[in-house]
Image 1 (cartoon, rainbow, N blue to C red):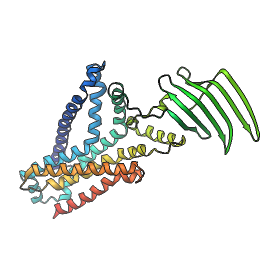
Image 2 (tube, rainbow, N blue to C red; image 1 turned 180 degrees about the horizontal axis):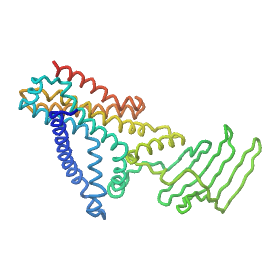
Image 3 (tube, rainbow, N blue to C red; image 1 turned 45 degrees about the vertical axis):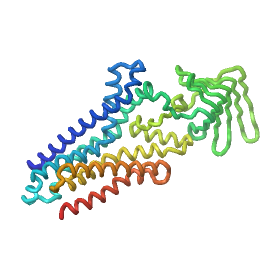
Image 4 (cartoon, rainbow, N blue to C red; image 1 turned 180 degrees about the vertical axis):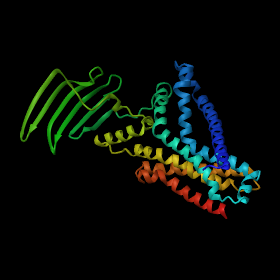
Length: 362
């Protein structure tokens, strides 16, 4: 059962954590708004759109990235204050061990970790979709990295498409070719000079087409010069649009399905999406590790006071972010497996937390 001291420490943790979130959110909004205010003025965007379609979702995104750092700062801030007024020393003199003191901290951090885990996989991606749609419409208009020339895709097993050029302005393709393969044999080639997307029917309308069918050594040809052929394919105009931050707009089940779809189409480089899935799980557990580190650092009364503890905590937070970006880059570039690359910072700082806890108990 929770004792009075446990409830007191949990309340101090959560209240300081929420205060830290509020302060940093206000700072982030001011900095971000000042960097984009010219784009907002130039575009036909209303104040309501800025607030409800962008700023609220921006706050969710930035806080989702910085929650572990907030937890570290919050723990160091209120624990160092308790240590400076000798409350931590009083608890130790009353017979409480460091391990027992850690209990309410981990309980409070676990609830934040659970929320962060759910938010990373579902809430924040849904919020990012609204925010990024706003940014692509009003701010980053040329952030599209989708391929438009010499496109090779597997639509499904046994079905491959080649497009020499895709035009986004009218959702049309030039020099379209569809190959159907059964086993190891090529059975059919469908070529068309032009393919237009029909939004009403969800089909592609092929113009000036020809169909080559193969049956062993025999070949048949169907010509459709000046004619149209509507065909249903697992291909839509959205498949030609790829934003750099598109992975942030999909909840985790959608992201897994997208990776499977890309692999089936012959897209080999799905590392960035696999790393994103691992990151969404690894980051919340960082809160637990940094909570332990924060308590181990701030539970002792030192001559430098709270300022020294905060400086040490911010330095450790900076080192964690640097190591995280460093290992993620290696993982994205095929130098490390995605899981290992994302979890390395947690493993390293778990060792650091263990060392600090041992020293704190001495």
